[in-house]
Image (cartoon, rainbow, N blue to C red; front, side, top):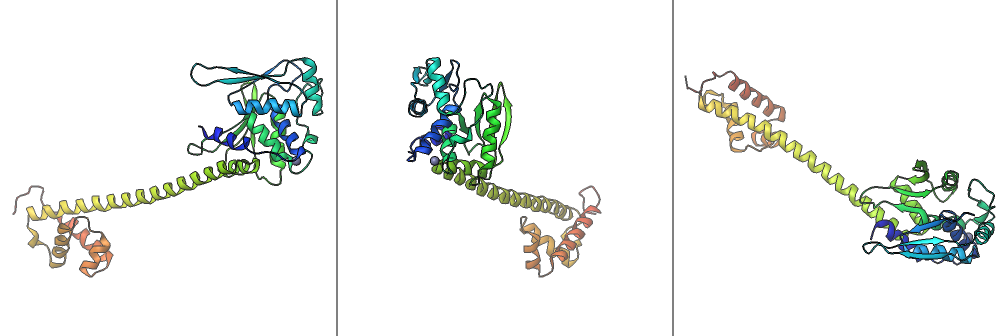
Length: 308
Ligand SMILES: [Zn+2]
């Protein structure tokens, strides 16, 4: 089951107790469905429970009968088509929420969200019918889709105006319709929590924390690997130089301090400068200086590997 479906399943379990909130949720479901129109129109929905909830909204708060038909897909995926038959019925449904059949542009009527408690229920209805959310393992995005541009703007304005939420949604055109979307993880979590998908919001937070920890660990280990590689490639250059000295003039040609350093390096190719400085009881810059002299010494040797 997708993360969005999990969210919806959680939201469908919530039972509104207050009449004002029941109506607000029903308004959200209907307004953002495609059947909230005086014209004959249908809403196609993949989630059977949401389809039933929409029909329930039409009956309880719109006072009309909505027909739900199942369309069986080729595999096990069926979808549901919801229509409100009869022009009079559709007019009555619009009227129940203060809308007029003559309206040319569909807008959000805030008077249907009577009390402070209502916007959460309204948004739950909106999310159920036209919302989706990306799996937090893949990214952070929650969006609502509607064919009505002005309605999208109204929804964005409502989201921005709610004191309980601090989100700044964006509105974009998509095809012939509009999308209202949030893309910051905190905003997505806040909205899910606000509309009642508390478990889904927790899951999203946990996944984000896990990803952050994992990324940090990865950064640290990349850093360490990079440093090891640096030590190792520096060390292999030194080993090559020491080998060259052995093969040409012999290690005895080096002064005592450099001989000691070369021997230590030869025995411990992966030893860090710090460890070498401890073993030789000199400073790190001292070790560095000796190594530089060894490299210089080897660099001045003749190209052919014959001892003079
Ligand atoms: Zn309420």
